[in-house]
Length: 190
Ligand SMILES: Nc1ncnc2c1ncn2[C@@H]1O[C@H](COP(=O)(O)OP(=O)(O)OP(=O)(O)O)[C@@H](O)[C@H]1O
Ligand SMILES: [Mg+2]
Image (cartoon, rainbow, N blue to C red):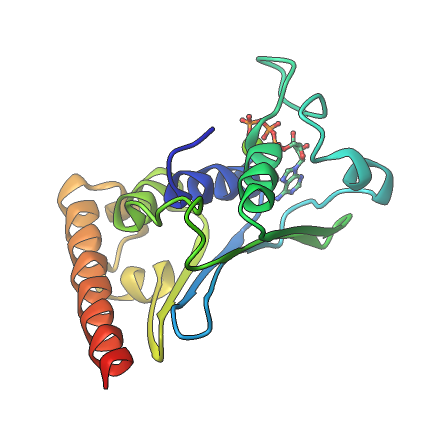
C-alpha cells in the first residue's frame, strides 16, 4: 500500500501521462466541516474502451510492458474502500479519463494527504509539455496553479525542468496550503 494520498496522486497522474494527455487537471478538495476529502484527476488522453475500463482496476490489467501487474488504480480503490470511501473511474476512448477517490475526512484509516507540493513539482518538472492544472481547496479557500500561467511568466516552457524553478513552485504551493489550513482552522473554531 502507498503511504499517503499525494503518492496516489502522482501514480494516477502518471497514468494520464502514459495515456498521452496534453492536459491534466488535479483537484483536491478537503472539507473538514463536511467530513469529505476527494481527489480527482481528469485528462484528455487516449481513454479506454468500455471493455478495458471494466477491468482496468484489476491489478492484472495493464498496458505496461515492463511488468505484468499494474497497481496504481487497484491501490487507490483499496485505499478508499478500506476507510469507507468511494472510488470511480470513467473514461471514453479518444476523449479522456477521470479518476476520483473520495474519503471520509475523519476516518482513522484515511491516509494523510502527504506532500502535495513535491508531487506537483515532480509532475510539472517531469512533464513540462503537458498543460497541468492543480486546484486545491481547503474549507472555503482555493488555490490554483497552471503550467500555462507559469510559462507565461517564464517565457520558456523548458524552464519548467529547471531545479530552481521546480523548488520555487514547490515553495509557493507549500505556503499557499499552510495559509489555507490556518484560515480553515480559524473558521472551523469560530
Ligand atoms: N488515465 C488513463 N488513461 C488511459 N488509460 C488508463 C488511465 N489510467 C489507467 N489506464 C489503463 O489502466 C491500466 C491500469 O492502470 P494502473 O495505474 O492500475 O496500472 P499501470 O499504470 O499499468 O501500472 P502502475 O500504475 O503500477 O505503474 C493502465 O495500464 C492503462 O492501460
Ligand atoms: Mg498506473
